[in-house]
Each structure stands twice: as structure tokens, then as C-alpha cells.
Image 1 (cartoon, one colour):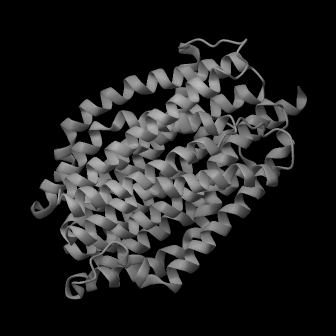
Image 2: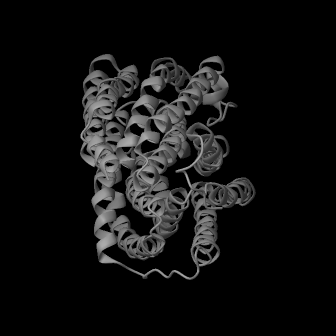
Length: 453
């Protein structure tokens, strides 16, 4: 269902819009969480490490998909808010066409670079074969990843957060069933985990694409037709998407550089890092999903020339995000062992003791900084929705630089805990930067311009 975010109480709108999106990201994360849990419990701790290492590479592809999602969502939101429905449809068609072509190109590149990237991360020989096997199967399904992100970006821009949730819920439950079937019953190991994800991502992508193009766009103002591709809209989308893609890509490159340092420690710490980063990513994705709602709200209201609503949207998004962050922090701190043990085979305590101890350190060092992380993500969301990509990018690159620098410096001088402190320090200065940009940034010129028209 299409929702106009330019009328009604901002807090009620964002809350109602965000809840299905949060549920969607929870189910989406079940894909990879199921992979990690089943690999760690029913294959081996080395299999868990292998899936974790390959995940550092898959983040590169995910970075392009999610970065494109951001640009697509802002452009469609702006046209929809301005009630330019022909351009809205053209923007959707342009996004689908361009991402289908780009995904095929990335598939070829991915197959070529996967092994060298694993080598660049100092991947241990004992886990490289399994990591490469998982990675290659994942790469074959990149077209599903890219097209699904196009669809979610378009749905979000049009105020429909329920449809993607339905498809993800079905797909995620199916993924868990296939994980169990392929790994526990058929004993396919890491390959079984990868094929389960491949099949279920394919279903989610096909279902979302059909719902977007056939059920939503075609029936939305059927008297108005859009073009299948527009170079002008493609350039406009690219202008907004490229900074986000670069931001997401550099974050992924940063994760690879950090992983290169992590891989110099013992395999139990590598497994702990892989598990903890998965938990960390899960919370970040929840907060970023709320941020996406704030971006759509900002873009629609700027398009509708109602900039006075944006501050209320920021406050509402921040309240929801901080609530999620505090809840996650409380659960992790109260139940540290059960949380980390989700991914590990506890029948061999002598093997996983180091991993559990490292996981506890992650929880007590990193999770208190979720408060700053949420503030940064929400401020970035407004900047992104207003098209202020320079300010949006500056804080993220600073965060990346600090995390990589301190992971190598602190990891060398104080050991494993230095990695956790590096992740925490990386939020402090960038949070201050993003909030200052939100309060005083050049993006406000768009508000003044809208108010003068």
C-alpha cells in the first residue's frame, strides 16, 4: 500500500512506516544468522570462521546494492512527494533496468576477485577452501541481491513497508528450513548453507519484483505511463547513489582491512569476531532501517515543499532508534553468554572458551557506543534525504579511517581487545560531525529555497 508521508503526524507516520521495515530487517538478518548458527553448531568452528571471512567480501557487493538503494529511494520519494507520477514510474523502471545490467557485471568481477581478496585478508589455509566455496555460490546470486534492494528502495520511497516484509518473512523461514535440510540432513556443509541462501534470496527477489512492477506501479495511476529508461533520471540517481556506494564500499574495504588484522589472531578469536560482527551488523541494520524511513520522510516532504516537518521526523526517528539501541544493549549485557553461544557448538567447551571470552569483551566495550551510533545514523538520514551527500559522506569516511587505523594500532599494542576499542572509537568523532552537519549544514539551503517558493 502506497503511503503519503507529507500529511499527518510525523511520529505516528514514521512509527507505522518503520515497524514493518524493522520486522523486514529482522527477517532479512535471519538469512545470515541462520547461516552462522548452523555452520557453527552443526559443521565446525572452522566453518563458522570461513563463513565469517567470506562475509567480509560479500559486504562489498552488499555495499553497492544498499548504496544504490539509497539513491533510488531519495529520487523516487522526491518525485512522489511532488506528485510527478510519470517521473515516479520512470525512476522505478530506470532503477530496475540499470541494476539488472550492473548485477551481471558484478557477478563476473566477483568470480575473478574472490580468491585474491581472501588471500589479501590473510585467510588461514585451513578455512580458505570453505570460504571460497561459500563466496562463489553467493556471487552467483548477486542479481537477486541487487534487484531485491531496488524493490525495497522503491517500496520505501512510496511509503509501502509492508509488502517487502511479507516476502522476507516467507523467504527467511524457508531459508532456515533449507539450512537444516541441506546441512543437518544432507550433510552438505558450508555449501549447503550457501545454496539455502541463494534459493531463498531468489524467491524474495522474484516476488518483490513482481509485486512492484505488476501489482503496484502498473496499477498506480494507470492513466499515467512512465518510460522504461531515462538517462536523465539515471544520472540524477547516480549523483545521489555514488557517494552512498562509495561510503558503503569503503566501509566494506575497511572491514576487509580490519579482518586482515583479526586473522593474525587465533581461530577462536576469528570465530568470535565473525559472530560479534554479525550481531553488531544486525543492530546497525535495524537502526539504518529506521534511518531509511527518516530519509524517505525527508525527501517526500522536501518534494512537497513542507520542510517544516523534517525536524519532527528527525526527533521521531531518533526516539525509535535509541529505543532499539538501548534494548539491544540491555539484552546483550544481561545475557552475554547465550547471545554469543548462538553461533557456537557448546558441546566442545575447551575449543570455544576463548571465543566466548572474546565475545564478552565485545559486548561490554562496543555496545555502550550504540547510543552515539544511532544519533549519527539518524542525522545522516536527514542529510541523505535532502541530497546533502558531501556532509553525509564526510562523517562516514572519518569513521572508517579511525576504525581501520585504531584496529591495527591497538590490535598490535593491546591485543584482541584493541579491535573492539577501535570499533567503539570509530563512532565518537563522526557522530559529532554528522550532528553538527544536521544542525548547521548546507542542506538547509534546500529548506530555505522550498520555503521561499
